[in-house]
Structure formats: C-alpha cells, structure tokens
Length: 224
Image (cartoon, rainbow, N blue to C red; front, side):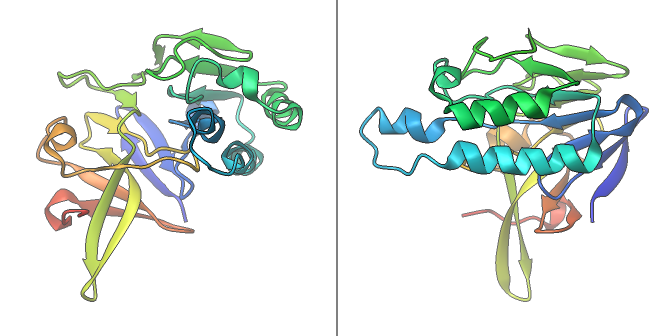
C-alpha cells in the first residue's frame, strides 16, 4: 500500500517501489536510476552482469503503467556516467523510448551524467507548483525542495531484529527520494551528513515490498 501525505500544499504519494506520485500535476518522479552502471564498472575491469538497466526499466515501466503520468521527472543521475546513453542496448533504448511516448520527460542534471540524456528536456532544476525539484539538496533548508542524490535508507528494530530499507526522508520542509535504480547503495539517514539536512520533525517513509511505513527519526537505529 502506498502512503499519501501533504507536502507544501501538494498531496503526494510515496510508492513502495520508491517513486513519487503527484496526482495534481500528473507527475511521476524517480531519483537516481543509475542506468548502465554495470557496463560502466565493467569498462573499469569489474566482472559484473550487465542486466541492471533492464531490471530498472522494468520497474519503471510498472510504475508508469500503474499511474499513466502526463510527465515523468528524473531527479538526476539517471545514467551512471555521461556515456551511459550511448551504451544503451537497442532493446533497452526502444523500451525507454516507448515509456516516454506521449509524455513530457524532464531530466534534472545530476553529478554523474550531467546533461547526457537521450531525449526530452534537460534541466538544472524545476519549479512546479509549490515545489522545487533538483538533484542535490541545498545546504540551507529550502521549503518545498524535492531532491535525490543521497540514496537514503533507514533501520528499525522489529522483534529484536534489525530491518534496513530504502526510504523517503522528509521533515515537512524538504523531501529526499530513495534511489530507484536496481544497482545502487544507500546512506544511513542518521549519518550526520544526511540527518543534518533535516529539522526535528524528520520522518523516514520506509519501503517494504508492498507498503510504505512512516517512522519518526526517534525510532530509527543505525544501519550499521
């Protein structure tokens, strides 16, 4: 079950797959796809299977079919490096083209791929309604900011067992999305470099296989 919440005069829905749905703007937002990460690492000598792009695209396809958005917003690092779009296989490129057909596709520049996008519109950031979309959160609190970059994850104890999951992170002023890509790591939400971006009302919207659970920061434990 997804989780719907109010954020700066917008009604948003956090999905269990890590995507963000804004029905008022018919906008589906995903962060940090890191497409072609496997092939990027393989070029450096890492022996890894090159299937991460297809798995991420299959997950993205399911999200798009579920919501049928008018626009898709990618919050940066859609590709793992600037040559990622060139390395897309013909079937993966065709699949991505089909997902974009009839929609506005907005690529926010990240720190990995910069302006390397296969189609659509490349932007440094995006103001839409009351919200501001960018890849990396600004150091100072920016009301209505929606960002990615940090791949947040959180941990809680359930019946004596630690459960670690990717999460959305918000304190009501800013919102950071989890990484949507299959082949991505994550940063503990309690890490000072991430926790310090939020105020006292920080809440983790932790992803489970079919649900999203809101957990106040006070109930979180260290991921490690």
